[in-house]
Length: 190
Image (cartoon, one colour):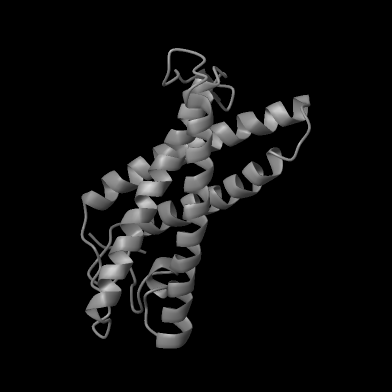
């Protein structure tokens, strides 16, 4: 299994980032939708703290993923893929990166405007983005955070749908190379 991406497919590190971030986003969605329904209890405070810690983790991981991604090649698109599909795929991927950065930042902004503590998994404090409680910005930051989440849900549905369509409809390697790598990829590469 190659660590770096090749012309034929994504490397192991890009795939690991992809699936880890995807799993954390799924967990965040479930936690976020569940926690807003909870009554004001100590359990809700713990769930909010977990949600914030996972959000900071996603932000750090996506920054690392972008840095890694910029340092290596992008696999070639399947030869039969029409130009409009390549453009659409790049637009969706760019939008996904932007959202995966913007959602944790808007959550951090909301948390800061609420003057709530942000402690990453109980290990260290993360400073706020505002100078304490900001009643003007708090509802706007929350609305932005929630709106971006639903835009992300829509784009993820498009992303997953397109990957499944490529796999089952087009029978190409678009999904396969993100799952387990391209056909014929063996051994440790450079």
